[in-house]
Length: 162
Figure 1 (cartoon, one colour):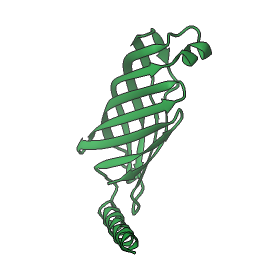
Figure 2 (cartoon, one colour; figure 1 turned 180 degrees about the vertical axis):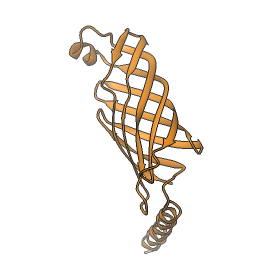
Figure 3 (cartoon, one colour; figure 1 turned 90 degrees about the vertical axis):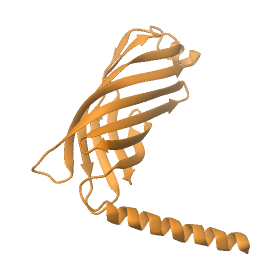
């Protein structure tokens, strides 16, 4: 019975926190957002440290390995649509890939891959809801592990805003 009361109290606190967060984020801006990016599939967190400058961290995970990416992004409003911004930036990535990766892609090496990334995209904060959507392209070039240009990173992001 004590456990049930504690669980109920925790659920009430979480509901209050989510409601307060949604009310604070009714405008077109947000400070931090956490969610997923579809294709190739990543966990994403974006944090604005100035009104038009953000850091985005991405963690891509698969059965063949993982890749961590950090991006510095400059955001600018699109004045005709409230909550919509375009952004551009760059950063770096580090990945570790298994031997099955080498089997799928024989021209590439298994093991570690380190490189640089660019990014260009659109970011939209849904008004009245604690949700952010993004769509971007993130070309990258590996220079350690194997030298290779990759144009297939990026995708659609869905994040909960704080």
